[in-house]
Length: 130
Length: 204
Image (cartoon, rainbow over all chains, first blue to last red; front, side, top):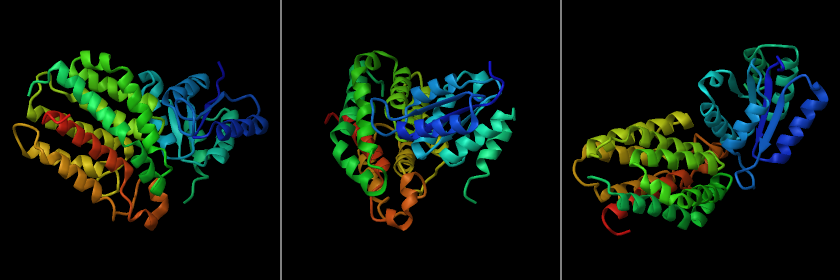
């Protein structure tokens, strides 16, 4: 079990999610559990609660999981997915209010240093527009 | 107002089919101020509901509403999935064991609160809440059968979102340019309310 906080990337577009994950892997390396998902159930642009749940479980770390999202539905669906997790896991997943690509890289960089979930979230959210 | 199983089936089927029938209209509304996916997302969600119609018709209504909500959460693919999903799940969770009007109003109040919490939104922000809240007021203020004017009130409330500037969802990115268009979520909410009224009055 990796002790570092995990990162999940949720985009409306699988291409964007995969691309952002590629950037995280290249810039931060393999020390951070990482998963991505994108696209609506059955294809097309959108987000899928079932896939978000699966991605959170793939990137699971007992230190918690930080979720980076792009637009509206990605955030709402991620919050919904978190509520569908077992109670013991719900409090250890946060959605970061940050741009998806920059936020994912910054969050993963922070996570790779062994930082707490709250520190990872704060670092990602320093990027948010004032 | 006991809900018989056959009536329950007709309610679920009519609501689902009404939304699906208006897919193109919802797409057009959402293309104007959103990302254009509302119609297709809702169609996908309610087609999945129809696929399980036998199952949802046979359950106690509260359980059925929860099941419909979970299907929408899992199948819609946009923000309207968790929003309508939360509405139906909360409605089902609060549904009285013996259906009666006061209990229905209480359950609907809980459902509207769930949508507000999920969307971090409230009335006046050009969303489905602008339709759900006036409908709730009528449910709370009247007794007896579901009043026919629920449908006209819902439609008027949806129309009333046209001059409003959006403050939630993708439409809020447009600022002033969101003015002059009906909110697609308000429209889909009104469609569902009218479908329920039509069934209760024997027109569908």
